[in-house]
Length: 83
Image (cartoon, rainbow, N blue to C red; front, side, top):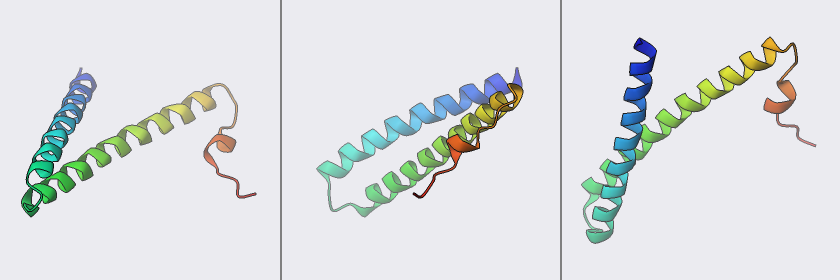
């Protein structure tokens, strides 16, 4: 139950950050000389990116676990070859 509540809180935070970023973009377009709006937009976008990184790390971890359960190796999917 604890994990579900945390996941729901993260999802709500993601939605709130998207809405706030959209509002700040509109304000920044209307008032281009206000640096505080741009700073707040930057901070909001940074927090949103951190949230997306957290979700991405979780997806990678689940994928690794799934590969391990089936006895296969997943390294060729996560390693970029420089040929």
